[in-house]
Length: 464
Ligand code: URP
Ligand code: ZN
Ligand code: ZN
Image 1 (tube, rainbow, N blue to C red):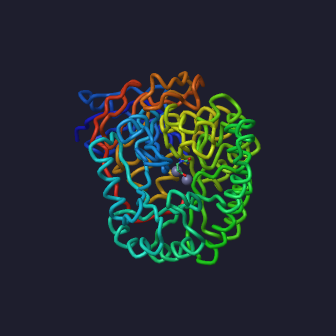
Image 2 (image 1 turned 45 degrees about the horizontal axis):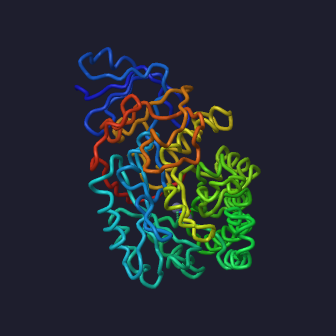
Image 3 (image 1 turned 60 degrees about the vertical axis):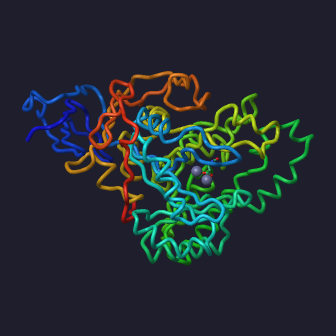
């Protein structure tokens, strides 16, 4: 058998072990793994990965590309967003297809398909957002059959027309339990949040505190109360839920206790909650860092790292929702008008590697598990993705274990004109990235192709 490419002499890392071996690609798949493949197949183009880690391509299960949101459209689309993904070693992204106004789930999915098709350089798939239970509930079965077993509800964003109440969450959990799907939930407690926002929304306070009001009006109990309710509805329906972008230590405690009690609930966190804290809102650029939920405190970071290590936090994603300085300037001193979100795809893996593995918070196997294998298993992509195995898609990332690069948005793939991590020294950027057998990053340079990335249908969800 002849191969298309061999990655030789690298350390192949899985969620449980390290193997010194060559890995051969044929077409879109991993065709062989073994010692001496490069020596035996001399004519095959070979990448020497000596001294490098070779891992499955990363999977970011939470991105928003070209999202119409907060009166504008997020600045990374399927072109820049998936180039950024590849540069950071991510080969599959999961976006959220969201219906607007009276749209059906089908219209949302069709809109997102169009957005991605000609632009994506790495693979993608979608969660579908349910924003109106009466309209969308009966449509789920049909969308499920099209390869989308994961759905999302928001407990906030009433003014966007996206909010779901407890009845809608309860009903969606029941329906998805029958279908064998998974319900993702943005958990923040909207009524108390609105009360706190209204109470603080005065010209004097805005002059005094600026963007710091974002954190002052979102104490940790805003997330914790909402997670408690999701746990309750998950328990009574015997359904399956997944808390997105969990940001608090309280959240991690609640999820751990619920899991120990047999509730089928999972939770992810995002890289920014692990390394940035709410002091950021105090600076001149504080408004740039505003997201929902917002950055929390070092104690929360510590608890979230512990959760990743132990497992109650099952994966790390980005919630990429990029807004440029000009877009963020729409706030004009009023924190409730800030376009909420940050760039993150390009730095996800380097942040978790540098601050997790190199700081001994995680083993290299934990890292591969939380960024590649567990997200693939949970979201129904495994074993096609998330593992280096003969027959799996040749989604492969090669990186140097210690070489650090200074983050500079000016040289990155993102469309953003700032970075939350500007000037940080990070290891873990992709030296080579392959997506379904095609090289997308070669020696840190982008060599991918718009339109190569493909929609990946899924027919099941799983456990970590
Ligand atoms: O601030 C954020 N997270 N923007 C994206 C929308 C969401 O809530 O995930
Ligand atoms: Zn959200
Ligand atoms: Zn999000």
